[in-house]
Length: 392
Image 1 (cartoon, rainbow, N blue to C red):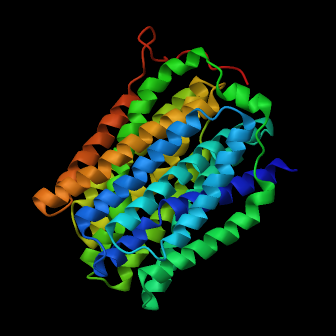
Image 2 (image 1 turned 180 degrees about the horizontal axis):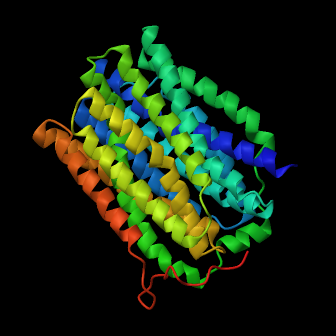
Image 3 (image 1 turned 60 degrees about the horizontal axis):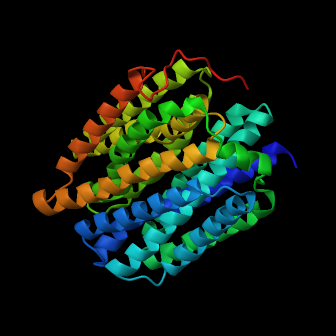
């Protein structure tokens, strides 16, 4: 089967698992709050449960070594995204949403790690590394789709339960489309994914950067729809911000995929995306429509591009440990994401708003950009940027 078809299937799989399974809570949050199912503090805890599940799934994926384990977790993760989204139709109140979001967190992490581990070597072997990079635009278009569906639901006056049902049907259609065409794990790929390599020395710093990135982006990504809803007093214009965030994210991946491919270029692009997101988080502090629009542009455009660049950086440092490092980095990312909603819940509880949490989030992104910009030194467990790049 053509690698192009398998990469397209990977793209759609991430579009479904991340856009719907992973991020459907964001456009649903204003509905859940207005229906009285939860309050803002509870919303932060539910989001934290989602990211705790994401952490559990990433750690488990890191140790899934045999081809049948890779395949099993990919398929189970995709099906769980559909089934748990459908189950959300009947959910009502804090605990049911918390448990379901934990499950979708596990499932979406499985899909992300396995698709990354399978699609990127496939693209490299086919001589199409840019197509491999574009796979990461899938979550952005998934977010765009969920945002448009939320807008349509709002205009039609539908409840959150109806929107969960719509999301589940769309997810099922997408899953059935891609099932026959997903990349297949091979023993060679599985063996390579757990091999050790000297380039792993740089993964520690990259893990810290990715964790700070998870903390920094997650508060606007989780609460953007709610902030817009508060600003526009529940009018339909508030529902435009989330699909615009997703579209900007997809376009950011396309832009970054056009860059020069070498370690220094990757490092500099990663620094730029982190600092742009910091500016976007601070823009959200303005609390106005203009501030939120800047937040969408400056947080959204580099959002998935940053994820792509981190994974590219890890492959440059350790090309023979794709799956293990994807799982390790995703776990670091999940820790940052988990801290974000807990920080937001504390901020809401003690200050009545998200401003303190946004300040901490933006500061974390500034620090992450500084770590990325500063070349790592050899001899201290980190990989120098002037080290030879492994031949492929």
